[in-house]
Length: 204
Image (cartoon, rainbow, N blue to C red; front, side, top):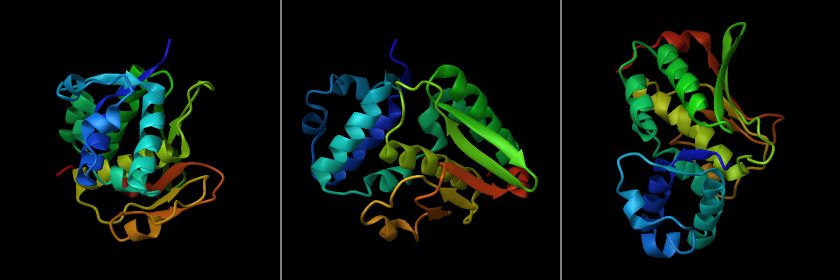
């Protein structure tokens, strides 16, 4: 059975390509996703649809760094009731624990993981199913998307470092002033690292 991801990821993609003068109809043509699905309050999409549609969007828009721009649009509400629970948490640590627990419970192939090593927190995306792996661009989008969620929840303007095991997309440097983390490419793993004291930062 093909695992599923939140359909709100596709909503974000559709909104992004619309800004670049590509209609939803053109973008979704042949994908099996309908305009009616986009209007649902919360829905799911097959796992590989995210990989395929993100690459399709990059080709249509001629924007190699699209995944980074997409990450800037991410909010906790993209995760439906789970995101809403994170938004009413006491602090960032509690919010991330909620996201870790409930997102991972809903998808066998996509499981956020929070670990502490000495004075630092490591947030990564565990992908236990070899047949269902995020593409490099999808990894950029989702990992930086979690950082963006933390930014919205706390108001922090600096949230540590993200390491990515891929080459830097062309044009990604234009985003660096908008991101609230340092992005390092060609690393050994995909992980967001920040000081443990950030976990006690209150939710706005």
